Amino acid sequence: MSLLSTEEQVKRSAKQDLYESPDYYLLDELLTEEHKLVRSSVREYVKKEISPIIEEYAQKSQFPRHLVKSLGEIGAFGPTIPVEYGGGGMDYIAYGIIMQELERGDSGIRSTASVQGSLVMYPIYAYGSEEQRRKYLPKLGSGEWLGCFGLTEPDFGSNPSGMITNIKDAGDHYILNGAKMWISNAPFADLAVVWAKDEQGIIRGMVVERGMEGFSTPETHNKWSLRASATGELVFDNVKVPKENVFPNVQGLKGPLGCLNQARYGIAWGALGAAMDCYDTALRYSKERIQFDKPIGAFQLQQKKLAEMISEITKGQLLVWRLGVLKSENRATAAQISMAKRNSVETALNIAREARQMLGGMGITGEYPIMRHMMNLESVVTYEGTHDIHLLITGMDVTGFNAFK
Ligand code: TGC
Ligand code: FAD
Image 1 (cartoon, rainbow, N blue to C red):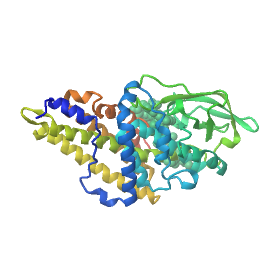
Image 2 (image 1 turned 45 degrees about the horizontal axis):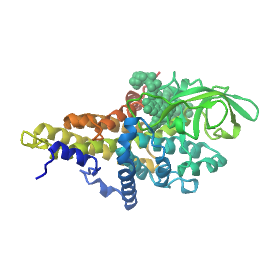
Image 3 (image 1 turned 180 degrees about the horizontal axis):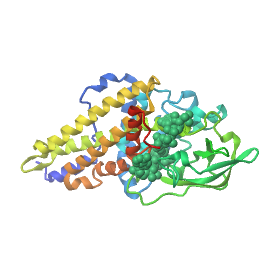
Image 4 (image 1 turned 180 degrees about the vertical axis):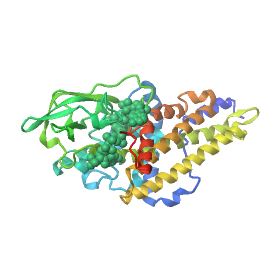
């Protein structure tokens, strides 16, 4: 018989990362062998490289910058971008699986991959010139360079069309002025995809490189959420941006919103990863933690929580799988993506909160990942369009009435 208290035994097993993903409706049967291979290699990576260190980085509020190269090596950046440009050439289910496994580890790590792949590589690929693609994509795909995406401004968050960051024509270059706020990866980024208005008031996208005079990226401190992800501002003070850095193939708000479709899709899969980790942790704990002489999982109230969690996870898994099929066939609508992003994050937040309670006092410690997931998800429910903005997008889609204006 072990001399350790059950609490101590449970605490020790927590450190090992024994994660197993729930698959209540046998959805693995819908995956190809390639999908399963991608999943097992990313899961292995998370267990080996992320789980052992993430709590410490989050507690210290530090970005594990050293992971960027290895994230590139495992194919986490731009999985759907063609191989010749440094991407993975995979379908959208594979992309979703990668985001799910990474966010199972930590939403901040998934954020880094979302931004790099969907918000930096995607616009360069979709809207950029051939020279821009060749110059930037391979280095971003391999993790040699890190990028960030500047859309939000201090006075324009949910309504980015009002942005005041602007460019003025100065011959062979533009002069960029303004500021972006809440930018993931900014303090460490080698380059930024920036959205600014031209002299006609048309939104244009461009690549701004670190080292350009007048460009700085001050870090945002004191976050209680996404503590292992670096967030910052982008400040442009008369920055000279060469004309060849501006995307030739898109104009208007549909440029940045097109990128957000990619990233929101990844979050729809990713947030379920955080939910699955919370569920898996709470389920294991409920079988090990003894109170009133039996495992707490034997009490009806705890079973209710677990049964509801697995029901919601299963519904979410079905939704994102179907969305992935539609996206791979280029049939997914922006409104469908909004619904899935909103649903997955809400599911994950509810599960994190319930799972935290199931662990009692242990639930608030860093011995377990639940509180970290819960706090991270408070950002995930806000960025890439808030919970209410996505609800209004669905409302507009089904009624035909625009409640934004
Ligand atoms: P609206 O007039 O509706 O549309 C303007 C133009 O854009 C087109 N459009 C879209 N195109 C592609 N994808 C979409 N999802 C699109 N939604 C709209 C639209 O057809 C129109 O095109 P055109 O050709 O007619 O000009 O625009 P609006 O100003 O009324 O705004 C609509 C609204 C509120 C839905 C939109 O602005 C919005 O989604 N707001 C939320 C802002 C947001 O999500 N910000 C995210 C910033 S990035 C971020 O958070 C990264 S976190 C990364 C991480 O760490 O993981
Ligand atoms: P606001 O737009 O001011 O919204 C405040 C509240 O009002 C919200 O509850 C919102 O739902 C509500 N609201 C707004 N309009 C309406 C309406 N019409 N009807 C009803 N309610 C409404 N941005 C980037 O560009 N790049 C990044 O990399 C990035 N990373 C981020 C990382 C983190 C950690 C965070 C927290 C944010 C990040 N963002 C990034 C910004 C993010 O996208 C914005 O915070 C988000 O879009 C909301 O904007 P806001 O914070 O200005 O809130």
